[in-house]
Length: 311
Image (cartoon, rainbow, N blue to C red; front, top):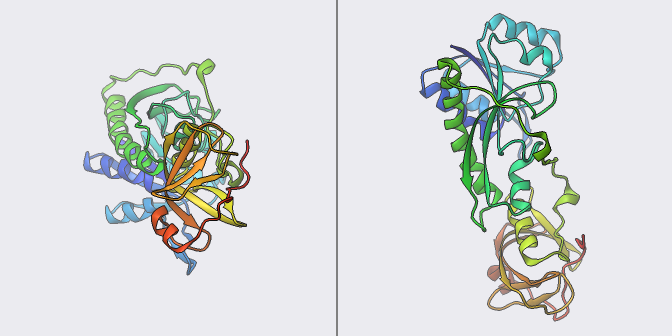
């Protein structure tokens, strides 16, 4: 079976490697163009491009997915199947090219969390289960027939970074199983139940501000669902502080939401109901550090309060 693989970030790399290790013929890897990264702004390849070159696979950097020349190149590959993992939205003129079709790996249990940031939102909303879904592409994004799903439990302190790595590994297995099932004729698609659909929109800066007026559990879920990137934030003494790791501390109330109610043995903050303990933070212009380390070098005023995020 001739495959074209499309992907860009770290999340897609395990799937590419798994397909290669399983012996499938990957006739082309399509990824995003090199772009400037890091403090030096040097041109750097995508993680998928790096992996593809290590595996000796041909790489094409797609600039304009709607350019007819792009479709012409893929048409010449005569692929049986396109495998898409964390790539851009393909036009219908492209995803209908393969003999069998094109399937995508999505980091949620569709139809839940359709959209750009399922890993963040499933944790921010406090779900106890997540997983991955492979599905055939159709014109409306994230709505195609489901091929295969794999479920994973979520523990109460799991961060978005941890879930990302777990789902990348589980997803790689699901991708290989999907190709095998399609090849062997053992997989049948089932339609998504649109009535059960939820959304996972792109995360913007304003989405990351800590909603201190909510319960301690909701604040904790907000923090872990955005950790380590793009990171929850709140203002303290006129400066932005990113909050990377927390836990639900207790149910008592000690003042207005956002009030720092204790600095020993940990940084305890009042929420709308209950308190959270902050364990890892990143002050503006500083590296990430433990709250204990921060408190050794900073005196917290008795009336100190994190500002904003009252929604």
